[in-house]
Length: 223
Image (cartoon, rainbow, N blue to C red; front, side, top):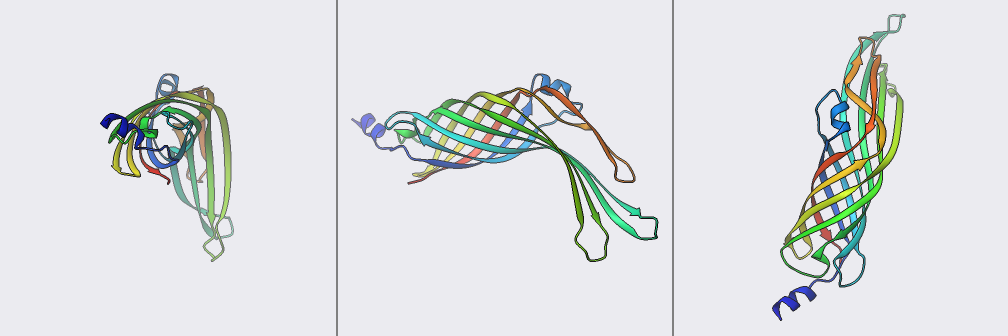
């Protein structure tokens, strides 16, 4: 009777979750890059009960990972004796957008520790941007020029995690994910060079984009 009561005590509710995450390249993604690195990211997800009184949930997540940045400030003479400040920076990003299907007992039990497993699929955006900011130091607004390149590729994989209840509507979420990515072009951070005039050169690598992701979040159940 106690077990039955525990199972029926929890009603499946929508959930939202801010997350912080670390993505580590693996396979071709790790071997091709000239700089060993991990990507720090922030994001959010929302999940919903798939069917009442079952452990199935579905949802979506989006994250933004910083893949590195190199920047240089230079003073440039325009030839008329006026000197202005030029800032040149090169940065890369990775942004996965995933749909999730999860086997999660949080739908129908109030146990304090709740493991879950699931799968996800979606797309991943890889962006590279060389941003040039010119400040003429005359009180006017700086001028900004962006040279952006974006690649979109497939992304899918599996996840395993643990919810630890903090209160009736709040849980700590700890999760491991392996995401298999399609071919994409992305910034080779070790190739960035910015000269004394602020001119930036860099290379793009093109490989498959598999990663391992380690994620911590705070799950809020919405009544």
